[in-house]
Length: 406
Image 1 (cartoon, rainbow, N blue to C red):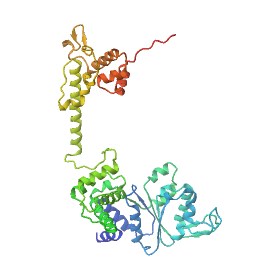
Image 2: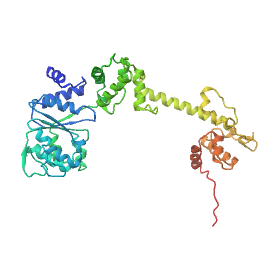
Image 3: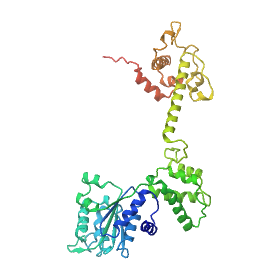
Image 4: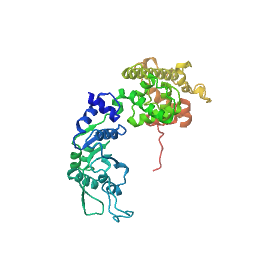
């Protein structure tokens, strides 16, 4: 345990979660052994920090660590960047140039986003891993280098192998030791220490007064999913410190800042919120509320169809538009009275057998006839959108038949 604490302090790796303790144990085991390491995990989980920790804890710690982002190098020049080139080998090659593998001789090279390397380049990477040999672009001479390779990716290399997008032999060679970094959403207990570290570093370097984060604010941060992981959290902490300069960060500030940055159109699907009930109870409450509102809607439609007045209390205000008299339409008094040979449409002997669907179809059909199939006026009269009316017409087969000349 003492070795892990020392390693964590020296490397700057933050966290006390089980996932991070396992990562530290792996670093401690493989650092001193001259073996290639593959670091996997989502983007922003800190793969480069782990690579630096391995190098710093290795026997090569006094030699260079060369960091290469393979995804940032264009395909046409990646071999020149990795292995160097000879003067005149291509346009713009005005002099001999060392590549990253040559520059990292006796040290460590970290290839980030190795899943982005072209297949042709992967062949040469395998050769370097197997026997330390490479050739500069445009040169026939074989050169030697002694480097330790650490690679990282946020892709599933095994899946790429199945798709023939990554060489199987290189994958097996890289995957000798695999360190998988957990996503921030799977180590929420580490968010507090991260926030504290990022805030202190940023405020000190920018001479900003820092009064800390309220406990509720940190709890709200723990309820967000953080798809961008540690990188996203770091940028968020820096942003809110700038916006709330010198103030102690509260949960209201966090929620306001989240809303402004991640959901500018008030879409609060992933917004952190303090929820007293568990998620299952919250879902049940939501379903019960929707069922209650549906029951209200059904009762109001029934009252409308049989000519009863509709209450205008607050619980039914959202459906007052169903009353055509509120739409400013000039309708005859008897136009919406649904009668059949002197009886109300819903006769006593029909109760228990009739469906709301039947009432709805009859209402729409007769209203269409009343307005001579004018759908705009019909929709307005019935208190529904034209889109809903069109859907209902199609559903009930109420399209007027057109006689075509033969």
